[in-house]
Length: 222
Image (cartoon, rainbow, N blue to C red; front, side, top):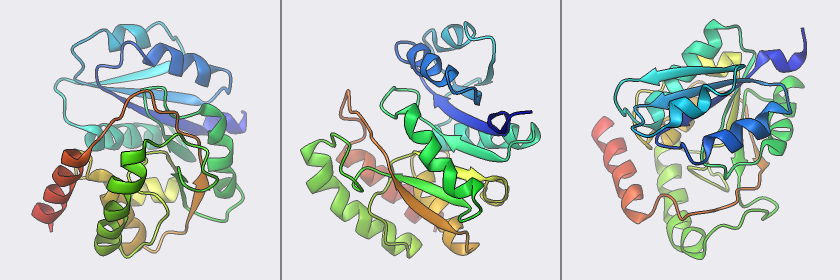
């Protein structure tokens, strides 16, 4: 059994019919175990995934949110015997070639979780508004809620060893899950490391209002 057979890539997907096939085709060359959680899509996302015989397809009947999709994927991967779980987006902006550098510190036993950073190495074409207006206050808010001073927040590209994945229970169904995960990292004293990754933006993604929704969800939970 190859090492890659113990690496599970969990991909939450909501209405990603236009992008998911290219993402899965790119991942196929690395021979990882791939799990797509179809989060209540109303387009052809599920049909596109079914074209890939070696990809696990899980489905939510309704759109529950990225946090809920990741928790579903984590639980399934752990049941299948995963040793490392990688969270990966369905929109094609994350690069499969970066997975190796994300999982290497985990396999070497240095850390329990790695988090991709768009700022280390400055490889990502981060939009100006995100880099200079949205990210700075987001990092401050993230520090206030987690006590962790990171170079990047709410990237979504992360890798967890089996211990971390079993320890972290994602209860925030929406985008606040990213901060919630970091809260668990701090609470349970999990070893972590940031890794430079390249994110290629094809659209702007989450904006200022999305940040306010995350803050609202975190405050309500607290």
